[in-house]
Image (cartoon, helix red, strand yellow):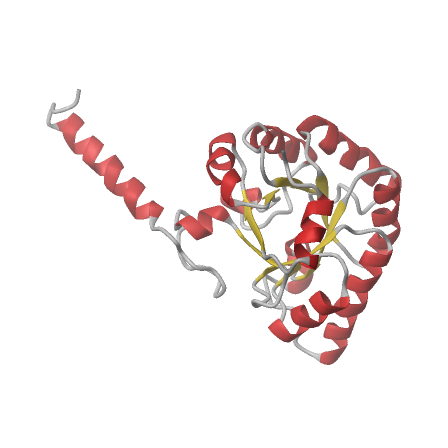
Length: 257
């Protein structure tokens, strides 16, 4: 049975770290499911799967397609789907429509939104409609054009106060979890201690209630360079290349089949 938001919240209360990874396809999801507490179908598929520089071109239908594929491979972890750029910013009504479509079409248990103070009423409306929301704060990839790239956030006190306040307001408006990306560890630690809901960090130090990585980064499939916080647990890129070359050589020399 998949973990619920209540299960994840209990893990925080019991000080049990939450293990999270991304997935964009059935095969990957079925392999990592038993190792994870939380699987995210991220709009990072724009970078990882589609080869784009940013996530901005990802559509709701992209998320539904990949989410439905991943869902078939997930029986243990909590399944969360990203709300892509401009699927929730225009109006609360549009956010409800798109989030409802994603949940119904993928059988996911929550949606994730990169939030600002303008998003708080949307979090509340979605939660009231029965759709758990994972709020994403700190470095928000959908704001690529505002930041001028993927840059760490919370470097000065005013920015830290903003992220801290936004996180608290997200919880008060009904968010079930918080993803904290690309901020100093001391800020992530403050947010984690302040909130009753779990925090999942990516590039935010080790003081969060859980950690998430892009699976392809973790496996060493993504070509370097990697973000500073990434650890490669395999070098699958080299292994796949070696295998493909071995196959090529055998075909060229009439050794296969």
